[in-house]
Image 1: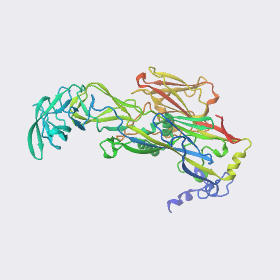
Image 2 (image 1 turned 45 degrees about the vertical axis):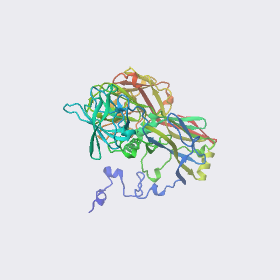
Image 3 (image 1 turned 90 degrees about the vertical axis):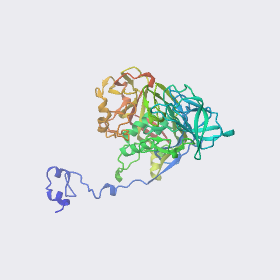
Image 4 (image 1 turned 180 degrees about the vertical axis):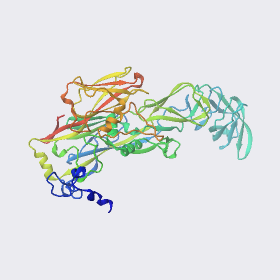
Length: 588
């Protein structure tokens, strides 16, 4: 016999198999269903249609800059508003303003008298001025280095000439090692195979005090995973004159982390990180970046996790399909608006520690401080040296915002369902997914913090703790007290990091770099469970408690100079009542 009949051959109506299956269509001991023909074949849904359309923007057609905001108004001729999608067009371009001073020298074209990146001695950069004549465009000028082991002559390529063949601009093709200055220093000019002797002045200065000089022209940028999602500072969902939900930046991030599948989260993270190489580096040497011109345009789209419940099977069976959106059909007299607040662009800076030894021509990475976009930036050394400690400020982040657009899933009901919703005498109560946020910034120089969460009022499924306390400072433990009674005692952060989230049925996503190391952003993401599974009937109605306190213990005292903060996201449900053509949050 084939394996397909083994279960039949072994069936005798007893044991575990007898409790699970039967071979009688009519069975007196309980309900019997077929896996081949069941409610998925006999259930009918009420007729409805769906499409994704752009939501019109108020004002200047979606064009907005960093630090601004944009309002989108939902069309009132639809019956149900589903998921929201935010599309952004950004440009990665050279906004840096710090070139040719101190740490940097421009390795591109130079004019006579301008700082040039010669491999000078005594931690000096060099200034080139010309006194010779008879040069031609394309000539290679060799400037002799001091006679010593390891030294190398510098070479210049003549790009422009003046009256009498004087050099007016040049490109440093080799900065050399151990080049020394001197008036009317002898040089060699090679043009079309002819070698002649001329003169050029090389005057040393003390502008470069670091002992290292780097090219500012073509850095390699490493953006954080999901960096472009940080352009969004806050999202407000407004119904009528009331703001129903405010999603802070950290709320969006933690909901992505816990309610997106691994594949979807990985896609969002990587598409939100500009890169030109498989190693996740944005190399401005790549011609596609147009770094020396107008930059490179990128187009990214993100889901806004507002009101619709995103935690559900990807492919549900027919009888289990449901829509958890906002039913405008039951409240046609109220406007629905979505307001997007954009973060500031911010400046880029990094610190160079003392004692870094760099060889000429190598790329040295430097960790960028307090940027929500860049994790580090690498520059090519123009000559060898050892660094002294200093801080380098580059200027605005290399991102410009061209436009933002909002798209939404628009659904239309059949007439009978629409009219029935409007005609319910007691109104239509509908549970909606909701989040609330608490942002705590007074956590400097303490190792324990008790947070007041009395304003939380949801039917709460779980709390998500995130934030940033500074380098190598994390959360050690957490305890929640409701009306002064401990909810679950002191829970270690290691358990909240993975096990608690998994037991709720949430995803546990992590940002993984190409070398398989975890890119931990701030304190990470900790899930404090309030129910047996996410959004289940064992959730806790926070509005029934007068006192809600969350106590956190840190592994160290956060320094004030890193602007430490803790963000608490309360995730759960609330009930909206749709009655008389309007909607209101009736209960939590």
